[in-house]
Amino acid sequence: MTNLNPMLILIVGGGLALVLLLLGVVLTYRSSRSLVEERIDRYLGEEALQDIEAAREAQRERQGAVDQQLARTGWWEKVSRDLARANLRLKPMEYIWLRFGLTVVGTALGYGIGSGTLVFTLAGLVLGYFALGMFVKMRQGQRLRRFNAQLPDMLNLMVNGLRAGYSTLQALEAVSREMPDPISTEFRRVVREVQIGIPLEDALDNLLRRIPSDDLDLVVTAINIQREVGGNLADILETISSTIRDRVRLKGEIRVLTSQVRFSGTALAILPIALFFIIYRMNPSYMGQLVKPDNPAVKPLGYCIIGTGLILIAVGYVVMNKIADIEV
Image (cartoon, rainbow, N blue to C red; front, side, top):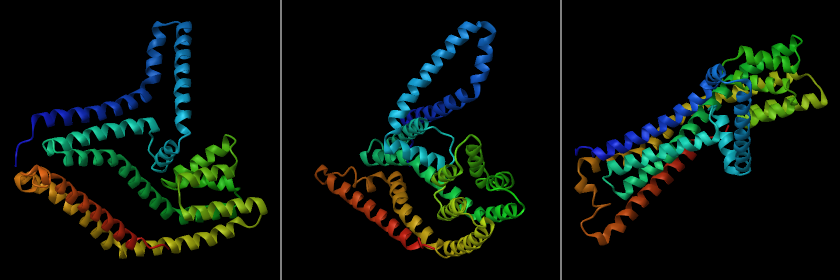
């Protein structure tokens, strides 16, 4: 195996330093603002502090205007919604900068590993660009599964509270205190939104936007209908809890039965790509005929072969996941 190019080490190190720098600036800015103001207060008078605060307020207004312009785009709204669903404490602009840094690092890695080959450079760029998005999607899926698994216990706790004489808001507050994360965090947000004057229906709709769960949609619909037309909410939620518990159990059994298909689809999609990179590093002259052939006239043919292979891998992965995705 050939030694790594020293320029590759410098590029990768610089890219990683850029990502760490961005994270450090964000975290430091958030945590040290009060400390900086305290130190400034020792040397500046009240008038100077007011001028500094006025300048900061003007900067926040300008930033807010930029955010409002960007918020009008569907892409910006989608980024905000995805970050909220993954429970990542990042602003959309911070997410963009972090994704840019990872793209730079991925491109540098692809360029260095492939010794400047276009295919490897593009592969590194694509992986770097989509890495953060895949991480966010993975966080969303994990959080949604945990939420759905905790939902029957949450409904039982609400039913007991309602039968003990609690109001709907008091029962939700008990859920936010007694249940584990993520369901406690989400219902704590609902309670706080109601406490600052947002109607309960709107707060529950906001919850449903953060947690796109069909089971939660059923619960929110039941609560809203009961508040409009009346009825025994405890009995309704008890019936829903039993239904959801059966669905969760059935989903778990299906997930176990289809785990082999999902694992096979992932392994079969990763294996050809991994083997290509490994063989290329072990024997560049052999696999290099696809990207750097001896006859430059057949170079487009190698790119066509690689592109066709990637398309077939993607189609096979999607088909196997569709087979394993059984609606309950």
